[in-house]
Length: 559
Image 1: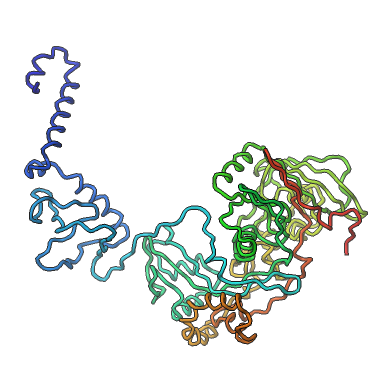
Image 2 (image 1 turned 180 degrees about the vertical axis):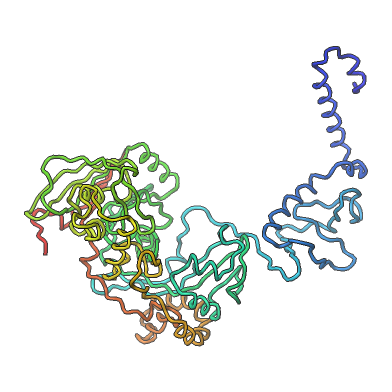
């Protein structure tokens, strides 16, 4: 029934719009069934493929690859390739009438990728690589370097490492010089200039020639550095339990759970991978670097999600033990003071009415005349919750390097009384630990310091431009060694007898590395211990304990 006859049969105006829509649908079906054999009919409407090609070209223009008129680099006599995804029109390769685009001579074969073309002289940005989802630390990462033990400390041999990142949105349109000067202040600009001359900076896997190059979307940056890690305690990471779902360890104080800041190999994740061949682990909770005790990992993402669901539903019970200043009350004490993060970068919190709600239950276990051992049950999981609540109660952890510091004022934060602004507090904390060469306690390094945090002491990693330029020549001689160094270090670690002591030292020195010329005093092992220990974790179907530490024993005495 055609449209004319349909209108004659209808008597109600309210059905007119329905009928018109039905007729249009019939025409579309008829058109779709005949378009494959009639080029003239195809020219009536823009093709779906041409629209798709238009969409695919949009991101290319955002990258600046085809801003303006692209130069024609076609082979004479051959048609210009259309955008990716455009199907060739049937026929002899001539453009379809009305489409305004030339069709490709042939579709690309499977596995082949067309080259992206830009205006003459413009830099082409390759598409981003696919990243593997999930945990990404494997044997190739664990083999970057090796450990050695000295003076009760676990140390990492210096190694070459590639810092890699895609261009952030806020960097687009800015030069590398601008990005390094504003966001990567761990080294002076003179260092990055010397690194360019030494071939250590790469953009899209091509050596950077000039820091004035302007970044585009999807640019891939790689910076090869000579990396040093702070020492941690030589105490082993002991396995408490392992089954098909979980791994539970007794974490020593001073060792971070996962790579962060200056720590990579001196972390629980890397130690378990290198020494226990336990890989692809998912941390189920976190402990502060200076906190020891029960630490749980899931072996699969599914188990991780299940445990995290239990945490969100408050089904997980946590019990800690600590040693605090003074005589803690004998009765049970509950603290519900809200906690506010003062600085995420420095890692400092305090009690404040604007903070997040928290609750911790405390019970004294013993008192030796000077300090008390206290059991702590955090009912919420805020950053530094136990440490901040104990400070507020006037009984900070005996050797807490942050919350038992004179930087908080005469009362050391008791009752929330802090006679200074947050900015003054942060500056005083940084100055105290910088003087002690213990910035790692604040998860900082010298290069992280801004003028607002430290006005009086220049970062020790700062090198004069003249000194760096003198080192550039010898750095250029090491261009090949930069790539080969990780393998060399691996061989030395696996077979130390193959190299003399002098050879080993030379391989761990780098002419552009400021850290190589610094002499840092090693911390004492006892200085890496804070008297806070995760004693027990319990959830539906599991319960794990860690032994009571020596400092929590009834007969323990301060040195």
